[in-house]
Length: 167
Image (cartoon, rainbow, N blue to C red; front, side, top):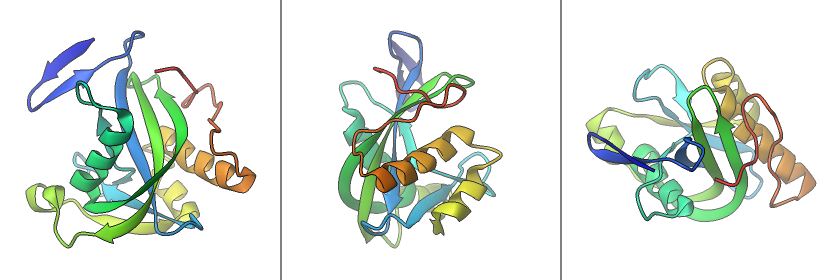
């Protein structure tokens, strides 16, 4: 299903969930620090960069495009952490890990809406996301879990905010 929105087209899966993709951007293979960006709607809050899948676009391509637009970074796309479901907002987000190799001085969202980016330890990022982005907290918990278990195809099984799906 496709739904038009000004300046973008929203893609929905067969269950009516909006298809999204995001990247957990890490500074190194140690995955000890993650990059968050300020929210476009509430600039005092930090979020994981990501956005809607465009028509005919693979989620991995969406994830790379979104981090360039929102965070002004490029890098090496790594493993998929899974598909995370947010039932409150009817989103299913495929989340990838990207090791950042280049940070642009200026990027699209820094110029157009004043978006900022900042590196956080995983614990600090979990704190930043705790109240306003519980599903994104699950991304980081899965990052930590998959790194600790060296399981590259693991998905989270929290029934309330993040469930593996076949989006």
